Image (cartoon, rainbow, N blue to C red; front, side, top):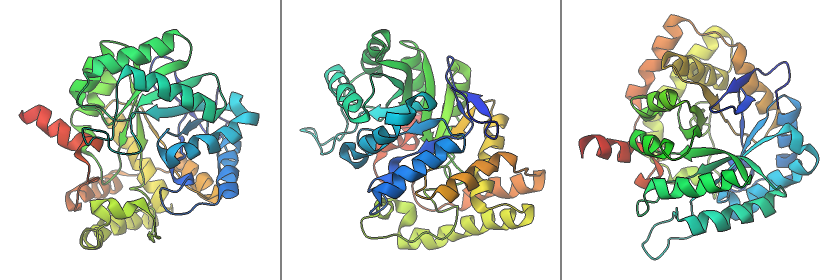
Length: 338
């Protein structure tokens, strides 16, 4: 599968070719407040029309509804899509108080439910969404390898793993993609995870490359918007973090691009500096935003622009998530210092 001429292709790992920018479908469900289903489906079609091939969803998004929504588009356009979904999160805490399950039994049951919701018989890229601390990652990845051998999935991916976990997983099966939050204001994976991904031949798929919308422009948090649960969007931290958004806007004004385009262009440059391949997966509910984001591939940033953007990370206030299990930051620090 290849993108249209206007969107270049990129190789993640182990023969997985996708468009240089993918589409994160999470926000098309209720994660950021109420969404209009017909508009969401129209936006997915617009992304494919514009040359996007990688569509990213997960079984936990909308408690399965996001996969069903993506499945509606796949009914007529399956051959155009590199389909990525995920397993690991549980809707509610389990007996141990955790919201993840990496057991082989859960992986097997979950992939069958995902296939049904998506209306497909094969998943191109299947991610382990979060690491279950009770189960060695090798055990879970072995279950993924079994699904690959059966032809149920084509490629194995990992999300929010530490460098050590990534290396252990890669000893069991080829890892094609590592997904984590990565942007101008979320850079904790650069020290160890990104270099490790590059060394084992895995591409990096960057979710929330626009800082959950914060870097792209003013963000209004509606009732039910999950961003209210993130420390950087607390009233105190949000006000302090405005300096970062202003910094991105200043560069955007200077180079004649939108803030979103600048944030995405920065990510491409930063990945190249680290010797890695990155495919960002910004999400939006508007077709016009899809086209705006894709135009980032033509934005050129000079040395002064990059220096300004790189300096912004020092001004960030607040962690990028409350749940330490959900981010590489805390577990990576523990792996290094422990």
